Every structure is written in structure tokens, then in C-alpha cells.
Amino acid sequence: MWLKFVAKEGWPVAKSDAVLGVPYFFACLDLASPYGKSQAARLVPFQPGEEQALEEELASLGALLALLNDPVSEGRLLKMRHYLGQVPDWREQLRRVSVGGVLHDAEFFMLKQNIFFCAAIRTLLYSNPELASEFAPPDLAALSLLLDPDQTGSPSFYLSDAYSPQLGEVRSLLRERRKKLAGLASLEKEKAEKTFAQKFNLAGEIAVPRQERAQREILEHSGRFVQSRETYTEIYYVRKATAGESSLEAELEKLKAMEHEEEERVRGRLSQEIKLRVASLSLAIERLARLDVVLSKALLARRWCATRPEIVAYGEPLHFTMDMARHPQVEDELVTRGLIFTPTSLDLSAGVAIITGANMGGKTVALRTVGLLASLAAFGMYVPARNCRTSLFSAVTMLAGEYRAHLSGLSRFGHEVVNLCAALPQPGDRALLLIDELASSTNPREGSALAQAVVLHLQCAPSITLLTTHYDRLAHLEGVVHWQVVGLSQVGEEELREALARTKPESLSELGRLMDYSLCRVAPAEALSREAIRVARFLGLPESIVLQALSLLQVKGEE
Image (tube, rainbow, N blue to C red; front, side, top):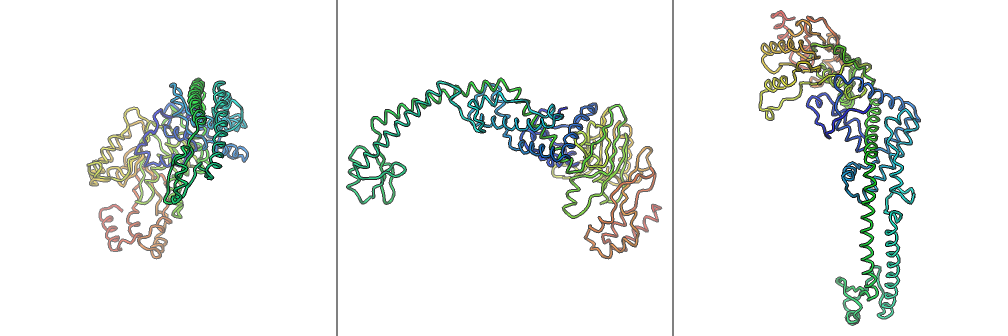
């Protein structure tokens, strides 16, 4: 099964993709060949209804991943990848020759390199016959012979005399005339050295000191020399060609013109022969690109300890489950800081689910992880999780990111509403919508009302919506699934006080150590956690302010 891609190169990455981390996935693929890079740039996710095609793509990836576990097969695959990295890009030449263009020698050489690496990769692939039918480029032996008629086996290219008897004859005459001219020039040079008692340098010049005027006049008046250049101390002369030499040189010029004309005719014929094989060459490039993409995915899957996602059949209800899932980009960033990523588990069905918890509790990372895994699966990639089961979605959208008034011309709230309007699923959409802090940029009373109305609207859509929020009332809406960050709820007051005592207020590392970023499902109407005050206390907010906040919560009956 061919990986799905669009014809337009450089398919734009949506803003949601950037937030989710999809560009990071493509960067980590580290494609080896120009053909693989081009195909990866045009990939698009599989859509609902294409589940069977996606399963075939995942099976192809699984086959390569299994071979990477065998040392011998791994060696072959890594050698193929090395060859892929050596292949020159010949797509522009293929386009030109397909419309009747004539190639030059450097382009024939590039083609010969492509053929050489195709043959090497093809041989390695047939060591694992199960891969050959899908990845092996076609046999280009006939083209190889066309570009090497003398069967030298050399990787270079030369317009051989074997291409044209006329070309061979002209070149033979050229060699003979050049030899004759060189002999005549050598003889004349010897005569001149004896006659004038001067020696020629390697450039064929005689150097005469400026002060030796008499010697200079002898050379100049002889009619056999002409001044070529001069320096501060010396004047240089070269010998004039004799009539015999001039005749031979004129003949050589004619022969070189004949050689050039015949070479152009040969290049034209070769280009026409190659044009007849454009289909085979196109297939070879496609196969190399496909091998590069799938092999790069397999290597990345191994590096990420990724697993094959289970794809929900099209006729079944929408579903997404991830168990011990990781976000590679966030995980890599944490590793550079000496921290450890906490895997996340979550289960979603059609409708609306919310994630609550303190700020800095990992809610946004959970959203990004859900969106990234759903996107990776749709791109035919294994996912960084112990298990993952997902439907294919018509769109995966995340509303988050920093606000820039000077770019949008809108207030933060206006910007949020515009983005929300664009992201709301249309009737019949099977979308995955991820919203970070819905309606958080306006006054809490109106924001809560708007958030509730949006949730009620989305519950009627045949999609999955997951949002983070601090609005209590969303958890009380019927049908809303409530997930909560464990956070600091399992940390005792004594442990928290001890950590506070030994940690500088501006340091977040100790808080990160104590924080449990995993999610747990809670009863629909269970009160939201009140960890904001605990976090504020931990980070050094004056105790008088903390106590006053707790008092106000109690007065209002909120704790």
C-alpha cells in the first residue's frame, strides 16, 4: 500500500499541527534521500473511510520494524539507508527528458549514479523477498548498459566512441593531428633554443631580463617571437606558430567542431532512449522515496519505543484511548533539563470530556499528547504509548497558543472566539477538537456561560471534544466526562512544608518532583480540585494572603 500523499509539494502545516508537535515528528524522521524528503513534505493523514489502507501502511511499517530487530537484516536496512543518502536528485532531469529535453554529460552521470544505487538497494531488498514486491525499484539493467556501452563498470560517464562510428573516426583524427602538432611544436622549440641560446619555461615562454636590451631586440626582430607579458624585472616572449602549425591548428578546430556536433547528436539519441524509459525511472524514484519514508518511520518508532495503534473500524462509534502515552517533543525537552516525563492515560468517546487541575499540572501537555497520537496514527506512524486505540478523524484541531494583538488586531477574547468559530465541527464531521482553557480570557461569569453553551453545542456533534477548564459548572453538565490531574492531591501537608522549607521560592524543580501529572477519571459532578492555593503557597506567596484566600472560599461555601 502506498503511503497517502498529495501532489503539491510543501503542503502547509496547520497551526494546530504545530502546537500538537507534528512538525517535530517530521523533523525527527530525518529522511535520507531527496526523494523521501519530497514525499514526506506531501504526506496527508488518512481520512475516515480509509482505515483498511491505513492498516496496510502500518503493516508495512511493522515489517521493517521487525527486521530491525534482527542484526543481519538491520545491517542490510542501514546499508540501504546509506545508499539512499548518496542518491542525487534527478527529478528535474526526468521532467525535462520526458518532454524531449536533451541532457548534458553531468546529468547522464547523475542518472548513472541513480541506477547504480537502485541496483544496490534492489539486491539488498531481494535478500528479504517479502519486501521486494513493495519497495524494490524496477530492474534498470538496460539503462545501465545504455550509459556504459563498453561495460567498464565505472561509476563515471563518458560519451564513448561506441555510441557512434563517426564520433570514433573524428576522435581518432583529433588524436593523430594533436600528436603531429605536438611533435612539430617540440621540433620548432628545439630549433629556437639552439638558434637564440635561450630556454623555454614550462609555460612555453622565454624570459629576458629588462636590462638585456640587445637580446630582446634579437628576439623581437627575428619575426618568430611575440611579447606575451612583462614583470618589473623581465619581459616574456612566446614563439609564433609556423605555417605548418597554423594549418594543423585550423584543422584541429574543424575536427573539434565536428566532434561537438556528433556528441550533441549522440546526446540527443541517448536522451530519446531515456525518454522511452521515463515510466520505469519514475517508478524507481517512487520506490526509493517510499522505502526512505517507511524505513525512517521504522527507525524513529524504534527510537521512541512506539507501538502499533489499533484503528477503530469506520462503522464503529468514535473512540480514542491512550495508555501510558508520551509526547516525544516535551519528553526530549525535559530530558535536556534532567527531568522525567510522566506518561498519560486517557479514554475518550464521542461527546465532550474535560480535564481539570491546577495550573502547571500538565493539562495542556495531555491535550497535545492526545492530538499528536491521533495525528501520528493517521499518518501511518507507530505511537509513543504502551497502547493506543483510535478512530480516524476528519480533522484534529487544537485551540491554544500565545496571543499576539499586533498580528490579529483583536482582543485576546476576540481572537479566541474567531478561532473557535473556525474550529467548530460541521454537521457530519468526525473531528477531534482539543480546547485549552475555553473562554478563559473574559469575565468569569460570562466566560462560564459561554463555555457551558459551547459544550452543550458540541455534545450534539458526532465528534470528540476534550477541553481543559477551571469552570466548575462544566463538570456538572449531563454527559460530560470529567478527568482530573492528580497533581499534589497525594502529597501530605508535612511533605509539602518540608519541600517548601528547603526550596527557593523561585525554583520550580521541587514542585515538578512532587506533582503527579497523571490523569484520573472522577465522578461527573465531583468538585474541582483546589490546588491553586497550595501551589501559590509552595511558590512563596505570603502566608497572610494564602489564609485570606482560604477564608474567602469558606465564607462563600466553596470549600
